[in-house]
Amino acid sequence: MARANTPRAKVVRLFNENIFGNPKFDKILAKKPHRPGHHGQRYIRKRSDYALQLTEKQKLRAYYGVLERQFRRYYNRARKLKAATGAKLLEILESRLDNIIYRAGLAPTRAAARQLVGHGHVLVDGKKIDVPSYEVKPGAVVSLTDKGQKVPHVAELLSDKDFSPPKWIKRKAAVAKVERLPQREEVDANIQEQQIVEFYSR
Image 1 (cartoon, rainbow, N blue to C red):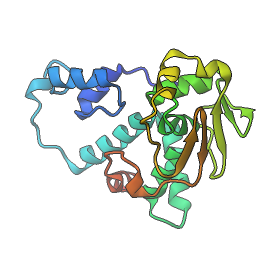
Image 2 (tube, rainbow, N blue to C red; image 1 turned 180 degrees about the vertical axis):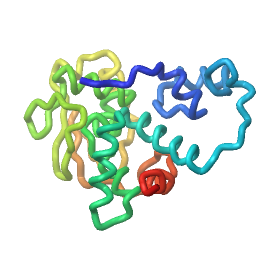
Image 3 (cartoon, rainbow, N blue to C red; image 1 turned 90 degrees about the horizontal axis):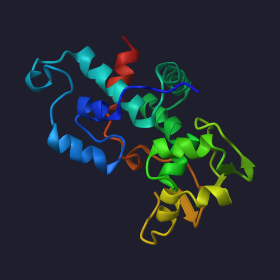
C-alpha cells in the first residue's frame, strides 16, 4: 500500500497547523513555529495565488492521508456531481473507512485508524474490510473485532464515557452507525476548498 513518507512533524510545521490531531505536534509547533528547512525562520516572501491554491490542496491531502493520484480521482468524482464541488470532495473524503473510525472515536488519529483497518480489526456490516479508503455508505454499521478492541490506545478511548461523536454518527461501545454523510459545516477541517477547485480549474 502506497503511503506518504514525509515526516509528519515537518508537514505540520509547513502548514503551521496540527492537521494530524496528535498532541505531540502541538508541542513541536510551540517550539518551532516556523517552516521547516534551513531558511524556514526567514521565509516571508509573498505567496502567489497558485501557491496558496497548491498549499490548500496539499494540506487537505495530508489531512486525510491521501496520495496525489487518488486525490485527483476524488476531485474528478466530486466535479461530476450536481452540488458544490468542494463540499462534495470533503464529503467523499469523510466517507473513507479510516476517517469514519477516527470520527467515531475508535482511534486517536487517522493514521492509527488506517493501521487498525490494515491489520484486519475493522468490520463493516459484519464483514472484515482491510482497505482504509473503503467508502462507507449511509446506514452502514462499522465495528471493531474483539482483538481490535484490546489494542491499548483503542481500549483507552472506549473507556472514555465523555466522548461524543459527530451528529451524523451514532456509536455504542465499539459499534458505530453512519446515519448520513456530513454537511460542510459539520466538517471541522480548516480548509478553503474553493482554492482547491480553482487550482484544478486552471
